[in-house]
Amino acid sequence: MSVPSAQQGAVTLGTVLLLLSTATLLLYALQHPPTNPHIDHTASPAYIVQAHHTSTRPLNDPPSFDANQYNLGDGVSIAMKEPATPPDSLPSDPYAQYIYHKELQLNGDHGMQPKIRRTIVVGDIHGSLQGFNTFLKKVDYDRNKDVLILAGDLVAKGPHSLQVIDRARELDAKCVRGNHDDKVIRWRGYLDSLSSREQSVLEAEEDDETEEDQGNWGLEDDWTVRKRRRTRRPRSSIPSDLDRKSEHYRLARTMTKAQYDYLRNCPLIFTLPKELSIHNIPVHVVHAGIDPHRGILKQKPWVLINVRNLLKDGTPTRKKKSGRGWAKEFNEMHNRRSPSKRDFLVVYGHDAGRSLNVMAWSIGIDSGCIYGRRLTGYVVETGEILSVRCPRN
Image 1: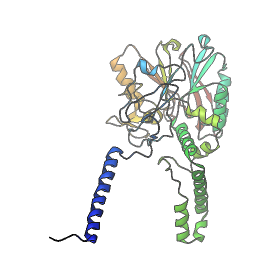
Image 2: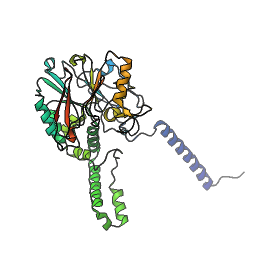
Image 3: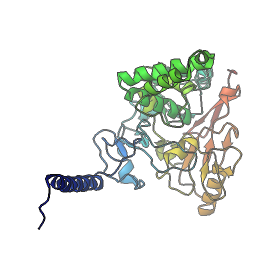
């Protein structure tokens, strides 16, 4: 009988140790599946919860709202990160911090609400402070008697975006989130998430991009350029739809915390109770529109802030020249369902191309203020349409 040598024993022991190590790694992998780097796994899987309410809904389980779930009172609402959105959608990231829904409370949200004179929903302002102030003056707005609801896109395109936010805060105006607001919010959320080191890396990359734009990098050899790019790359990735050369990025960097907090707290849907409406029906204010095939409180965030049209298969799209207007299909659908009685009204902005668009179940009020056309408002108590001419910016 042969006796194993010391060398053979060492090989056998090494093989056993290798097999044990491999088994341990496999077991760990099964118990700890890989995570999506764009989701904040330190919080609840799919929600940021405002006030003291929590949700344990799994990440891929779409929300299902009913009256008992969403009517939580002033300042209490659910913020949802939507992981599954239509084509050309926003990526799911933790920087959006969506607040899904708020409802105006007649006895809690505004001290003078039992004596409300008017509730005025105003279309896209887009940084046109002059147009906004002209509107307020013409309609004789009184913050002690009137309630102002801004239909999103307070910022971008115009010259005074941050001043518009300050004016809205001064007036205690309510608001919903628009697609341009959303990009500013997400940029600021991303910037606030960076460490001081990563902030320095981002600033260094901006310097590199400036030099590249000016043609200075041609003076350096390729190895130096590659080294600078490699050593200055931030560890946290920027969401793919955010452009560092955009106005949204500039606004996010320069806005104050108070301005950011105001904009971030604009929900995706703001509901006004039926007691205020001339038609005695709830009024839901959103920025862009809804998917007619979903309930008003089962909408995807991307749709609420981006949709313009519906494709032939019913998919919402933000493209102007594809499909047909969501509002047209929405109204046709509900007219067939209930031709003589309306259940609710949707008031929205976003679609300046169609301008003022009054239908039975919806009213579009983005009439292109930023393009030198008009800033439009809808009075919930009377059904009146108010508008003023805006300066061309």
